[in-house]
Image (cartoon, rainbow, N blue to C red; front, side, top):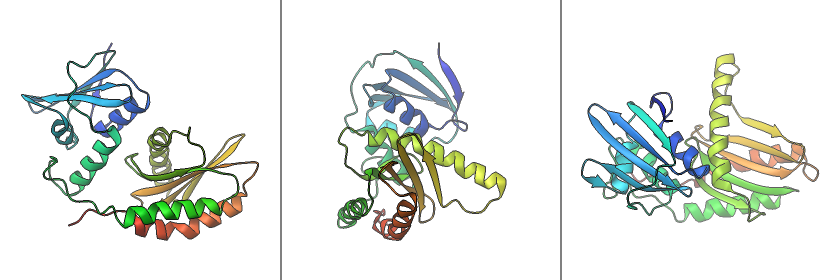
Amino acid sequence: MALRGDLRHLSLVNIIQINCTERNQARVQLRREGQTGEIYFQDGEIVHAAMDTRTGEEVVYELLTWQDGEFELEMDIAPPAHTVTTSWSNLLLEGMHALDEGFAATPEELPMIEEEPTMARLNDLLKEMAGEIPGFIATDVVGMDGISIAGYTADPSFNAEAASAQFALVMKLVQKTVGTLKAGELEDNLVTTDRAYILTRMLGDGSYYLGIAVDKNAASLGNLRMVTRQFADALWGALPRAKR
């Protein structure tokens, strides 16, 4: 049975995040104004994309520019070819940077991203912040599209990409709720479990957030909020920017 819907209600970015983090074998077909494209998922990655006679990553970049249209998602469909080798998170990162620039992305047209020294500085800040938080487990800087920009963890088994994708959906829902209540600007959100605190703090203009998980029995919530607030501006300043 196929799942059908409208890209205005469920974007291709979310479709990709869900299928890759859940490691589905699936095919999503997209239709708009007489055009049809398709993307195949397998083992947590995008492995094939096709539109007309074109295949590969350039098709993914173009489909990411579609803001409307219809989609049809079918499970357990094997890919007919393997034409995509870039990880799904990097595809989304490059595609979203290009979309922000206002054009349909192809690898040749993508803006250059300053990774040094800003990325090195970003990673250093995350490590420094982790050292000031008792019970630290993991932290990530994440775009509101669910793409992890940088992270640091004390637990190598922690799946940062999956957590980032899921918490982006949570943050969008929290933002919507805060807006509906007219309660002001969202600063942070706290999830408490029997073992951990998971704090997410908005960065800069709200297009990124800092997520951090700590051991509830070892951490102080007051210290956690204070330290993340102290580092928020520096983290925002270290985020890579597309060169105009």
